[in-house]
Length: 371
Image 1 (spheres, rainbow, N blue to C red):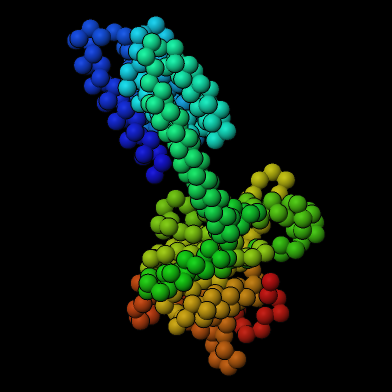
Image 2 (cartoon, rainbow, N blue to C red; image 1 turned 90 degrees about the vertical axis):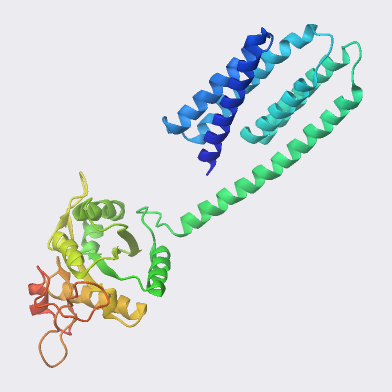
């Protein structure tokens, strides 16, 4: 929003300066030409830097303020020898002060404004017929501009701090991924909207052994690199808006929104039996996962419980695999894997998703080896 506002202001400023120059040059009014040329150049450069250079707006604050200050100084220098100071100079002063308070820290803007007002007042009072009333109004306007700008900057600072706090509250500090709260918020929203999705709960295999052997610092580095490594396995052609979140400890949750069953199985095929290479000095780790489609449960809590059960099943089946099947009942064979071409339909698939046969055949209701 701020970038668009800056670009619009720069374009309007460039158009205004160009129009003024188009009027002054044919008339031979050369007195203010350097000032308006400087303003035109600055406006064009700002628009270019924001549009094509993609520079952050914060990096332009000081250069723009300096350029406008220079242009204003160039415009005011001829007034030293002029018999009178016109209304345009007052307007230029107010505009410059407003720009200082808008771009610079409050204390710096206040110091510049106070110094500039003292110099401008000296310029006015040394004229043959000074307008003290207008000068007094200018002082009041300067103070009001400073107060409004100060309040505005405080509001902006508060909004930025609130946005940062909210972002921090929804981000896992170690991995930089969305945290449990952020994912639950999105899951509840999708569930309420009736949007179909696939959900995978992933757990790093033998992570305690990584901490015991390599130390907790290396363990933290493994966790920090797991997100990028998992997303790399899925690849850039994965489902749109795929979200990977840290669920807690060494557990992660992968959300595949709006996918059909076949698309979800295609993703888990890439994850099936994969290992994660996380960088020099770090061990290569594997993971187990439980997966489910959103239509498989009547409530979101039931769906979360289902993926957790299937994660346990993947652990019990020997780890390093994705399990789409629930644990086998106490009596009878293992349950059939889900198989729908689109969430919400009731047509079963004819066969298990690729890569799940081992999990399907080994899953039992006993999880002594879980986690």
